Length: 347
Image (spheres, rainbow, N blue to C red):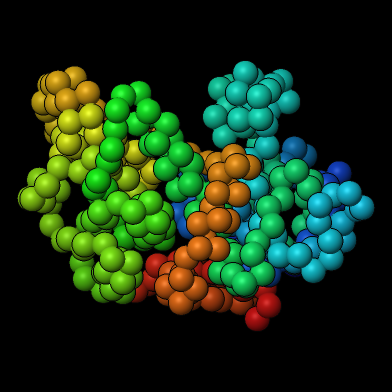
């Protein structure tokens, strides 16, 4: 079968190659891939920044944002031929740690987890893949190809769950949320804020399709600095990974506010910041700054519910390009108007 692969740690090694059929040890459910979303994680793996192939293999099949159709499923698995599905990315470590032992593999404590398309397990960017039914999530048939948004939506479902859990530390009735960044993560964060009945604001760098999408949700759209905003948000979802925005967002929080870091910084840039000002603001304001990554099975299910409730036409505008597998280089080359690009295995 054909698959998009890379030699981890080697830049410019991405290639569509013939790979063996997925082994039954990957799971009893056989899935035909319909689409795979592309994100910054894939770009960094292709650039050789990180990534790990399965033991004993040179190449890693990419792809962790999946949408597929079940071809074969055993009786009692909860799935049947023709079901639309998305695969969960992470697997618990074999030790396991305290979190993985409790089924909270997204909060792994010892780093021995594996991840499909990222760390020591082949991903979903192949014509077919096998998977365990307990790591498979049904996709609403009405979503159709938009089910490829399941994995990024699961990250935001986790973010909102943790925000709401932290809010329970005291009497808390949030009204406003600020989302920094208007990419797919930021817009999905805004969607879930609107679904919760909050006053949603999105801050980004420029006008364009993202601005229209935010406003069509009913969110306010801002361009400029966080410090210039005329309000202090109860919740911030920082979805850019830009260090300056992280600091500014934490300082801008309302008293008892919560800031979730959902973007990943490149880590190389140094910035000048007044740590004392930040510390004073957080202590005197009882504010919280925390990060999230990955998602658990319940977060995928919550994401499925959020996507099923969303306006289909609005969701469809998030996917700005669909490319064939052979044109994967076009898919991974970002264009100015891109929001989410997808490799469509049906083309």
